[in-house]
Image 1 (cartoon, protein in one colour):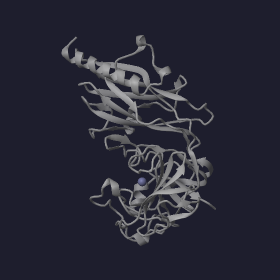
Image 2: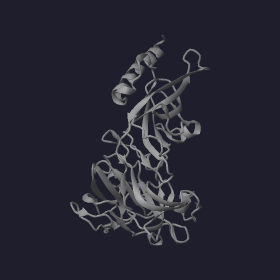
Image 3: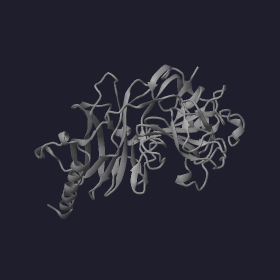
Length: 394
Ligand SMILES: [Zn+2]
């Protein structure tokens, strides 16, 4: 055994102990005779809870942190979710894996350099007819240069990295907005600005925006605004009433931050200011609704006040860390927009009006390029999918 491999072996032992202690349900621990020593330690950040999407699939949406505990470059080749001894959703390999892997070094690809870390953003989608999984594990494949013969690759595959699955149903909500043409930008379930906000707040990784949606509204020319990009008055939906999606008590509020100029993110925004003017409503059972970027001076509720479904909380604005008017909406597991974990939700009823293909384009003022056939029709108890256009109410 060379010095390098001895060091690797030591990290393997640490890795294995950590996996057993932190992530694996007792029943998922395999006999020692089948266990392998992995150079990378994987950990699922939060116990996943399923949600039904408007694509009529169940989605388990979660993140896996991967830390290369060795001093070798390790190529991650496959992350394949499993449940009940079978595949769950499509395995992530090749370009699909790369698109859902963020190396914390900032490099592209799926190779973790010595000591580097990454997060893999998983969306395991499966038929609603399938028995709900109680636990998940993963088939994981990796490869790295052979220390003795660097032109050869050592390959490793194992099944591990387990978590129980939450039995809680996604909370059913009314819509926080009314009318047609609302685009669910940065919605579920790719790696986008919301999911990528894996914030280490006071040193603990949080994913508060896992299921968050940025709602913007197309006008009757299928544009977001008329006139110059940086003129708030050209956005017809600016000032739209924001309504309580569920009853509860207002537990958090911010109201006096100024409107930003659309077209660019403000300079020097702190994380505390990111949500702009906002309302947090405790909707019960450990869930909190977050309505953000509200218009300056528009809040109609006070902290401690009880609100009923449909009650106007304030008006859609452009405050905080924002580059155009929108409602940022999500459900979280604590009253703190920073120190929370994003929870799934569904809207009781909405109508699908297609999917926008050019979200960056519409933000720049282009006419929406819409796939009119995608996700059309009435949806009940479903989460709008990323860039889906939805009509709320009649
Ligand atoms: Zn947002």
